[in-house]
Amino acid sequence: MSPSESPVHAILGAELLLPVVVLDAVAAALPLGAAIRAGGLSSIEITLRTPSALAAIRALADEGDLVVGAGTVLTTAQAEEAVGAGASFIVSPGVSAKVVTWCRDAGIPVFPGVATPTDIQAALELGIDVVKFFPADVNGGVPAIKAFAAPFSDVKFVPTGGVSIQNLTSYLEHPAVLAVGGSWMVARPAIASQDWAGIAAAVAAAATVAVTARATAGRTPSGVAHG
Ligand code: 3PG
Image 1 (cartoon, helix red, strand yellow):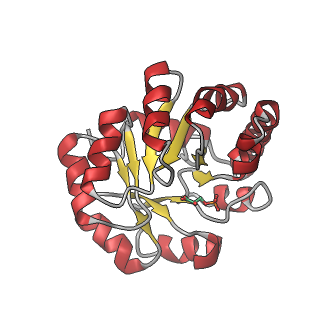
Image 2 (cartoon, rainbow, N blue to C red):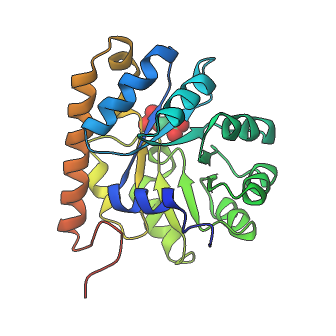
């Protein structure tokens, strides 16, 4: 299996969205997961930015309703802990050869973050052709992806950082975008106030916009152009 043919790559290519979560309370993990499912998505990235993150990954992975990944993974020790807790994919803000190599050796899909052509080449040298573009908005957004796609025609991007329901369509219309990631649909204040119905509605709204964006661009959800 090539590194870009894992189940999580297939889900992202089909659903076009990756909810990125900063979770303050472990108790919120399962209701949040249920809200994401109710909104129509089946993956989640839990960032290792809070003391609750690993326990939340474990709770959601044990429940088995979502494909659960760990984000903000900076070290191989964190990757190992996250996978031990049940994470089935790893996301990093940058390209760490150590983290990518650890994941590849463990058979775990990994999305290193890139912001420059040098980063993309580093990822390619490590055998990775689906990368997180981070932070997407402040690094040029869609025009940057257009520019990257010329020399790196086989690379797919998961732009994250500053993506919202307002600019989602413009990202998804570009054929080099596999999916977009973001916290707007699983906002920290909404989680804190246990607004599960609101989160499910935000996820559903994003999913509708995503599918419409792809249809308008004349492409199937898997990213394959028609005709
Ligand atoms: C990430 O770690 O990918 C970002 O913090 C998510 O960015 P956003 O909060 O702007 O969506």
